Structure formats: C-alpha cells, structure tokens
Image 1 (cartoon, one colour):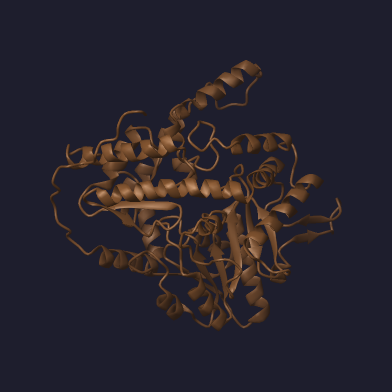
Image 2 (cartoon, helix red, strand yellow; image 1 turned 60 degrees about the vertical axis):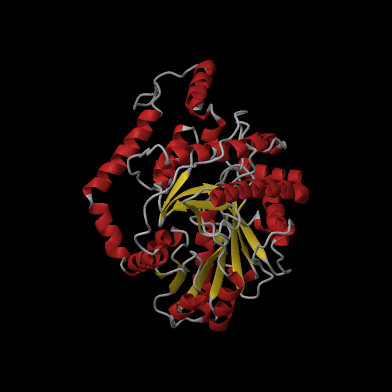
Length: 485
C-alpha cells in the first residue's frame, strides 16, 4: 500500500471511434423501450444466456460449499464449529478491497474509522430479537420518519413510512399514485406510468402485480431524463412520472424541477427515486457542490424514496417512503374480522427486524449533521480523485455525469471490461455497465490510503490493457443480488 503510484500509461493509443456513441445509445434505448416484451422473451430463450446464468449460479454455490448436507441435520454442531465455519465463509473478505460493495458499513477497515460501524452493530444486537411492533422500535421508526422529513424540507402535512428496502418504498409510492388517480380520475381503464429509460427496474417487476402500463422514455445523450420526450409521452392515461436522484447505473441526477412542472401541469404524481442519493445529496449541496433541488421544496414533487441502509449508513433492510401530504392515508392495511383481532400493517411487509431499524436510528443520531458532512466530504474526495485520474489518462472518459456518488468509466478505445477484470485480479469487487460498456463505481467514504490504492490499481489495470495488450473474456453484465453479491 506504500508503493508509489505509477505516473500512468504512457504508450500511444491506436484505434478509431467507429460509431457515434450518442447515436448508438439513443437507438439502443429506443429499441429496447419500444420492443421490451419481445426483447426479454427472446433473450430468455437464448441457450448461451441460459448456460451462462446456470454456470454463474453453480459457481456461486461451489464457492460457498460447506459441510452442510441437503437434509435437515440430525444433531447440532458446537458453537466453536459454527464460529469456525462462519469465519471460513468470511475468508473471501480478507482483503479489504474485496469489500468495496460494503461501501456504507464495513468491518474490514476500508472506510473512515469514525465509529459508525460499531454504533450500528451495537444497536442492531440490542434489538435483533425484536420486531417492528415492539414499542421502542415503533418509536425508532417515527423518529426516523421525522428526521428524514426534516432533511427533505417537508411541510406539516407530510407523512412517511419505514420499509424493508428501496423496492418496497417504490412499490408503496406507486400504489399510492395509482390509488390517488383512481379517486381523482376514475374514468381511466388502465393507468400508465412513464419513466426515463434509466429508471430502476422495479417498475417492470410491479407492473404485473398492480395492473398498470409502463412506458420507458429515451434519455438524452448524457443519460439524463429528456424533459421534452417525457412531456410528449404524457397521455390522458398517465398517472405517474419518475425522476432519479441519481440513477443507479450512470449516476445522473434527473431534472426534477422541470419534470415537476410537467407533472403539475397535467395533474400527475411525480415520484423522486432518491434511494441512492437521498441521504447524501443534501450534505453534498451543503459542502458547496452543485446539486439540483429534488425534495419537497420543489412544487409538484409528490413522494420521495430514500434508503437508510445506503447513505444513511444503517444495517441492511431499512428504507423509507415519504409523501408531501396525507394523500397516502390508505397505505396502512387494517383488518379485524378474524379470530386474532385487529390486524394492522403500515407497509407492504409484515414483520421486519427491529435490529436494522435500531441501527438506522442510532447511526443517524450518532453522526448528526456534522458526521454526515464529514462522510460526504470523504466521498467527494474519492470522486474527485477518480475524475482526476480519468482526465489525465488517454482514452478513458466519464460515462454520465458522476454528479454525486456513482462514477462510470468508459472508453472509445480500450476494453473497459478487461480493465475491470484486472481490477478484480487486484482484489477489487466492482460493477459493470452494458449500455454503454463501462466500469461502474458506487462510492463510499473510503479511508485516504484506500482512495490512493484504488487509483493506483486503476492505473496499473489501464496500463496492462493499453500497453501490455491484456484481454479478458467478455463477461456477463448482470445486476442481481442473487448472482453477483
């Protein structure tokens, strides 16, 4: 780690740009948007894709093989045996670089040593046997909602709910938008939701459950929601629009204010998906960086989702959905005509773990505004270091805007997937993009030495590809917790 970083690749680059990236991107996104049903059906039937997924699943299973058989164990193991097995299963994390996906909470020394992990762990353990109906956990949830609403500049009529994750938050916001439209516009036979092509795939997942039609709209050359295209896509059946803050893939902040004006004009629900950046953007803005407004200060924003378990730095399984007013009053489920009495569930899921909720509450109170500003500053330091490296490295370019916490690195000349393969060899676990082909880095508050090491390893990987002609097999670009985490 003390080794001096190289000056960067010095060999000449060859090759020419064969096609306009903007034209390619626009055509690809439009093709997928207009033909998504046949696109995915045919993709699923391709034998090579089936084989690839099967091989990936088998590889994952083999990687974590233990002494457990397929049958229910006849006799138990000792505590020492269990602890040894758990230690073995975590041995793949011996190098902190392999824990880069644990960019929010980390127990391998990758992140700032500010005590956040210890606080989150202690709170989680204190309440890990409790559910979300435990009185103290109910208090934690109410406090979390109020702290988030304050951060997002909500008014006195605003409401919210704590959920199990971003997907549930998006589900509830969508359900609230549909219920609101049903009350106000009962003549609509089948509601329509329009989202930028870069919007999160959850909306396709829930389309079959909630019975709406989804329309993905091509984005502009910078992967940002195209305001004109979104406006033109509005029909008499449109009930909801989406803006990302930022998009997961390219790290681009959609123009929330402009989209909110369209939504207000047509009486459409606008949801801001801030699951990735909601608990980071306010502090980045406070540090003086240019961050577009996205919260309830913007007229026309109906709801916001934000994950506590990302840049709120809680344990996994805690998100939130927040509403401008009480329009989502029908969200809680209440039923009392059964033998056990009144059943009430505030969100979609039933029992949720009290430990994760307690960790969110404890971390938010522990860090406070100053702590969140400190972590945001460290993330910006990492972001700036990566952007500086890309700027001085011939042939590389930033994909998207790298406006907040997601940086995409692409190239018109070099094989970025081979660069990613080299980074994997060095121990880093990073993501890939396929539209366009790029390395994706979702950033956390890394310690200074790991910021330097990440840039150093990127330089070595680029040099290996550009100067030493290293080539890796084409990878499968898959975003799936089951396959890649």
